[in-house]
Image (cartoon, rainbow, N blue to C red):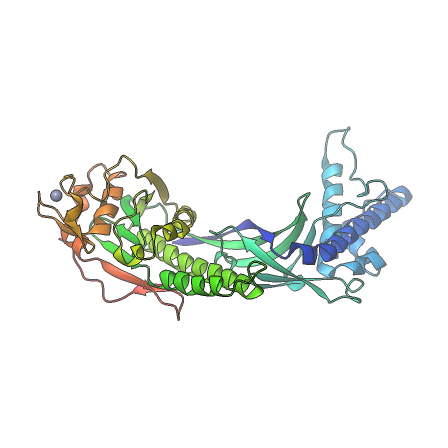
Length: 420
Ligand SMILES: [Zn+2]
């Protein structure tokens, strides 16, 4: 196992856009003004002595300038660094038609420059989805000394998970401000991914059932499900006449974060288990037919649409890619379904699946119903799935639970050795 570090940028939208816009606007205008001041100084020095000052020279010329103090010192440094880089690029270019970097001004207006916050200029609270961006000395007098942004990343990205955040960039996309988190991500990669295959069946009672053939894993949906029920109550219980109250909104966000966290822990464990078992390819399907699920069914089928199957698949795909494992999304319609016996291919009548147990009338297979479905998934990416299948394991999976106190997924008991 060799680790390497790569840089990744994760985009996020800003939830409290209206609140932070004036502050981010003034920082961005200040960045444009500083760029222009730097641009003017470069011109002056070039005209006088035929030398283009580099980034360090520019910084020492300008660090006492009023405009330099509009931004956090590291943010100002970054503006001048970009300017120096732009000049280097122009100077190194062989194309005589290339123009030197221009001023950032349109008429009397300054455009909104990207503002970069380095290590000392931001404070991230990934758990609650907040980031504090520091202002410069000049801009913090009247208001507070930082901009507090509530951000939202893509559902499959959790900044608490991805590694260390090196920089935060506030970027104006033409309509809104968005944040770009530049992270160092450690990638664990074995020399080559394994050659074995895995099948994953997603559901609600069991969030995931994984079949590796001669080993099986079951992930009961305990923690995720509790959250959904508890927070649904809070959410609708406090709604006033004017739409969701602040408390309801808080509950919604808290639910999202908790659910996201438990799904990350779950998918990370699935992918780690697969990597540990030399898996090179995973087949996973978006459930088309939700199987009989007495406990869940009582609350009505509508809730099933709330279930984050797509998010789970995205997370598995993303984490697997980092380990060189490929993921095949299998369209379950028209395939061997959960009603098909994974051992002999016989399609059982629905009443053969009882209390989560699959019993084949043809070959006598007794299996956990979800693992039977997972093994059918695995068969879509394996030419001879029976070669490494253990029917015993299909009935006796190792159960892995999400622990709310530690926030990780771990085995409930010693994994029984059920290899043939
Ligand atoms: Zn059978």
